[in-house]
Length: 320
Ligand SMILES: [Zn+2]
Image (tube, rainbow, N blue to C red; front, side, top):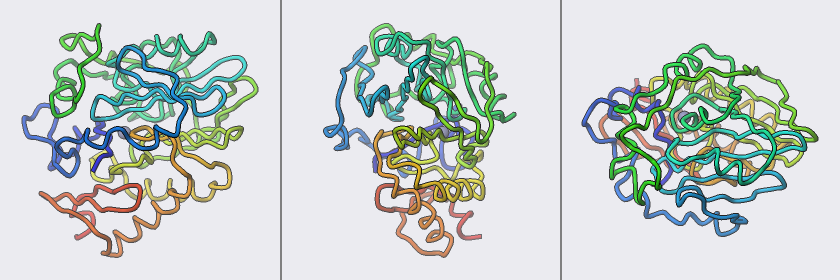
C-alpha cells in the first residue's frame, strides 16, 4: 500500500515503528518495500502541471492562486500548498526541508508569504525556517516540539534507501541537514480567519493526529486543507501522540461542515481528493471498533483497508 506520512509521530510510536535512534526497520505495514511502485499516482494526470523545480518539487495549479508543491521522490510524498490572495499568501506546510521551498514560492508569487503549519511533525515544518513569519495553532506540546527542532542524526533515517527512490537534489547537504529551533510569530485558534486579501482561510481545530493539528477552510474555492488529519494512504491512529477519541471527534466536526467544501488538499500523496471520503472515515472507525473490517496484522499493529484510505492502529487499542 502506498500512502504514508512517516511523521515525527512514528518516532514516538514505541513498539512497531522504529525509533529514530534504533536500527529496527519500519514495519512493512507502515512502509512497504518498493513503495514507489505506485508512481505516477493517477490523480496527477488530471491536474495542471506548472513544472518541476530543483529536480525535487513537482508543482500543480489547483485553482486560481492555489498551488500544490509535491515532493514525490521521498517516502513521505509531502505536499505543501501555496495559497495566494490579493495582498499576501501562505504556504500551508513546508515539507521535508530537503529542497528549497522558499525559492519555489518566490518563483510562483511576488507577494509576501508566511508559513502556515497544520501541525508540528517534521515533514510539515522542516522548511518553515526559510520564511520570515510562521503561523501555528496555539498548543503547548506542538510549540515545544517546534522549538526543540531536530538534529542531523535524528533525520538521517529519512534519506536512507528505504525512503528514497530518486537522487537528492543538488545543493542539499545531508551532513548538515537539521530542523532549526523555531517559534511561531502568530498563534491561531479555532474559528480564526486568516485574511489574504479578497480570500480567507478559516482555522478548524482538528486534534487527534497530533495535539495541535488543524485544517484550513477556503470557502471561496470550497477547499479543505487537511494536513495529516486525512490523506489518501494509511491514516495514523497508532503513534503515541495520537488521541483516538479526539481524532474521531475532529472527523465528526468536519462531517458537520461538509457542505462547505468539495475537495480535500491533503498533506501527502494526492492533493485533490473528493470530500465524500470524510464521512467514510467516521464509518471506518465505527467498523474497526465494532470488531469488523479487513486488516493485516504484524507485531501488534493492524492495517485496516478501506476504499481510498487505510487506518493503522495498535491491536491493543481494538482488542483489550
Ligand atoms: Zn503528521
